[in-house]
Amino acid sequence: METGRDEMTEQEASLLQQEIREQPLVLARLLREETASVADIARELRPRDFPYVIIAARGTSDNAATYAKYLFGAVNHLPVALAAPSLFTLYRRPPLLGDSLVIGISQSGSSPDIVAVVDEGRRQGAATLAITNTDDSLLAQAAEYVIRCHAGEERSIAATKTYTAQLTALALLSASLANDAQRLDAIRRLPQALEQIMILDDEIQEGVARYRYMEHCVVIGRGYNYSTAFEIALKIKELTYVLAQPYSSADFLHGPIALVAEGFPAIIVAPQGRTYDDLLRLIHSLQEKAAEMMVISDRDEALASAKTPLRLPVCVEEWLSPVACVVPGQLVACHLARTKGYHPDRPRGLRKVTRTF
Image: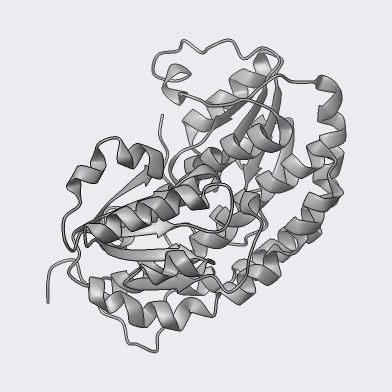
């Protein structure tokens, strides 16, 4: 057996697979426990009239922050900047945070550099908010306001249920700040949507066999699902050791498309919405180059061009679609790891909690 491999029986569900399946229940619990609290937070934040948002995060949480850039920009007309935590720790030269809203996002809430950004924001008089799964974490203690993910213990190394909980918490905050009842109603439908998406599990388990020997790929999305491309690529790298590079479809056309030759693997996230036509044009271009495409979509034309079409069984509004679109990618990474002979709960060189300074 190849070094670093750890086989599982076909019947044995990994912790990772179990936690992927838990996500509808996690989101339902988050909405039940936090909706009223987030509404209270939004009422307190509105009079502060902050002109922009600074978000500190690492890894998977950083991908949630990328989603927030589009979300708060489009819904709340707020510019969002991702913090450079090294300025707060290694360089000890923090920028002026002014009247901003400083958000720290962390599953464990224990990474010192993320805590340092929120600490400094509070010291400077900015509004501070933590999104975390750990109630008594340093991050939760540092922030003025806390939104809890209610994901329960996440035992797998690769984060899945905490990621979709973070996305949902951000959506809840955005809709509450906008005082938008229609958006809040749409968020309440997310648990049911994810329940429907779980029917793809068996199909994906069978479909990833053709990618057993894949060593590299690109993952492409745009707009709200730019974050999804990064998160799917991260899961594939963490679990299968495939060099998965994420791109915006626009950025991909500015040079990296030169990589594509016959059989080049590409995963495209292309649900309905404002970015769909742009992604469809890219899909057609990749088809002309005979790329090997896996497409996650709810649209027939996009799926028709794929060697591996993953049809979303439910249509979710574009601004919430990252919560839905990432789930097939999580399942792809999980089952591809097993197909390659790796244990998805034991990715080499990784720990559940990573503390950076």
